[in-house]
Image (cartoon, rainbow, N blue to C red; front, side, top):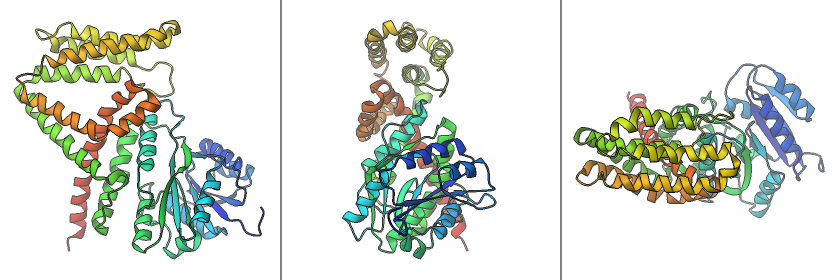
Length: 429
């Protein structure tokens, strides 16, 4: 290293992630900025991660028993000697210039106390939910305010003296949660200067599943973040808390109310339109990651046999077959490459025919019109995000992500309500 003490101390907490840790350390070894030390903190007893870290010349620490990433990062910070602490998750790969850009941020602004970056827009995960989730995080940070009011430990740096002066991460969070956000709130309240620089990027290696995503958003982020907001009295108009996202939550619950009314007033037309749209969207989604068979064919047949055919009886009996064709054509295109130039056009045409046919069902059903009206409002408010997804995944999968994004707003509202009840219960004398 150029100096007697390194400029950066890179701290990587890890828990049973040896395979991903190797990739993380390998990416760090390719850094064009070399004035750093690396500390790998094993959250729990020593395992094979220790040998991997030693292979890359990293200092190995252990918490002994599992105490959570907050405790592991604090242990690394107390052992670090660098002027600036750089926190990386063990399932991210740094770009060759990640550390150099962090260094440039501190050199450019001498008053800066902390800076954090973002996931990049090229997640390696093959599953739909992995790509959707990581791209959503990327978009949120790219469109966030540069003068930040929080912090992110996936790829974030803090001056060591500032971090230790603030008491580090709150070790009451014994699972991966909002310990970095909570630290950012404390730093911001103390008048520290925090910045978001989306040019500082890392690649997220995690493979998300649907249930893992929902469980994380509700239990590890939504509810504890709500409690933090109520304790601090601070809800900044930024990142996931933007006004547009709060309005989206209200609109999604209006959709739910309209859906309930439609199920009572006109269930068959409503379920037909909903089933067709779901089938069209699921036909574009690779539901099972890292497997050759994606399940698209099975999903299409399931909807066609179990929902579309009975629901369309005496309404629009030809719609299920056009819908199934629009879903099967992309599947055939992937299995028979020679058909690929024509599959997108055929699938789009069939989808358009099915969707336009549904418009003939809507007149005379105010609850159905209200449901899709509120849905259109949610799509309009979040159109920037969907355009971003389309530029990375294509329009078919961007459209397929819309129900997933609406579900995100629905359980975000649910998490806020539960968090309010928990806070109310805990604040009672």
